[in-house]
Length: 377
Image (cartoon, rainbow, N blue to C red; front, side, top):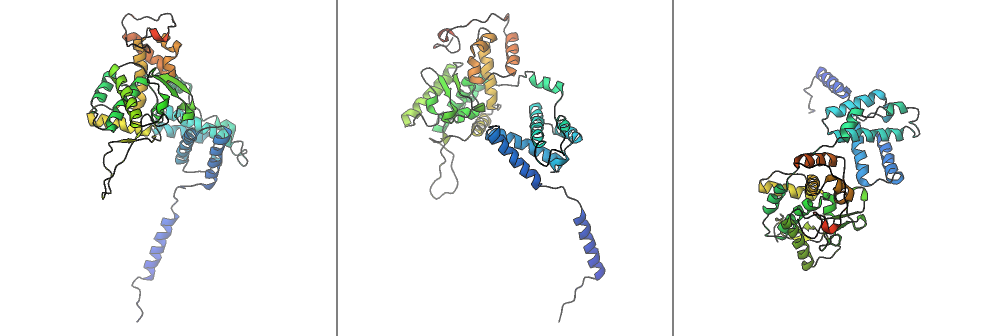
């Protein structure tokens, strides 16, 4: 006997009407095939025409993602001056850092400049509208002004280093790595990819060569030196390098190798690493995570590894005869790549040193310089 439906016709109509109304609700487009094609072409342009690396291309990709999020993936052909103004206001509401905010606008300005000359877009995107993707003169001035962040002190680093008991290889590596960050002011990505042969234990010279896989900013070949800010931390680094060579590491192996994961037989979970293996970290993310974990374990305030660069400059300027001397001899420029905020740090150091006045720059030899001489003064 056929089963008769209990749903009345009117009910079916109401259900149909309800579903129809729900389907008719407009949902924001999450994908635009034409936009994706142009983004892919733009990335090829940046890579092969402009010669930019993968990291720089990622910066442009993130900016494009911000714009797509703002416009709800609207066709790029609809871009105009009002959208440029609205996009800048949208970024301000996001609470981004000043540099991130300015860089995002700069990236979109470059993108629409490129897009405005592409076939199918020349008559749609006005060059005058692209000019609206710019920041004010006041914002530009604020970006140029040096800003001193809350940096660690040498005592902060000492406490962190001394909190690490050298029980395992990983402990020895971490203690030496944090010391190395403080004494050199190098970028975490460069430290993570630095081979043993790049460091001369006799002269404390460091050859940051991109041809050897060292990830420096803009792939610059940098010659730098490890400073003697703290004798004990210098000893930790030298002892670690000596230990690696005795263990059989070669010059091509990493100076700060990756932790070796260990797994007990019959156990699917990994145990805490105690040894290292001659494998490089991929980038500076592992260094950042390492410093953070060690800080949390010791119950100390965490400072991003990049702030150790600021500390290196502060120490150099405070120990030098004058900030001008340091910049003239380019000691810090070689290891820390001086940027705009050095002026702000120099000003603070000068004011902290009682009776210190700017002096005439005097070139001195390496042997007599208080920072890089053979003896610590």
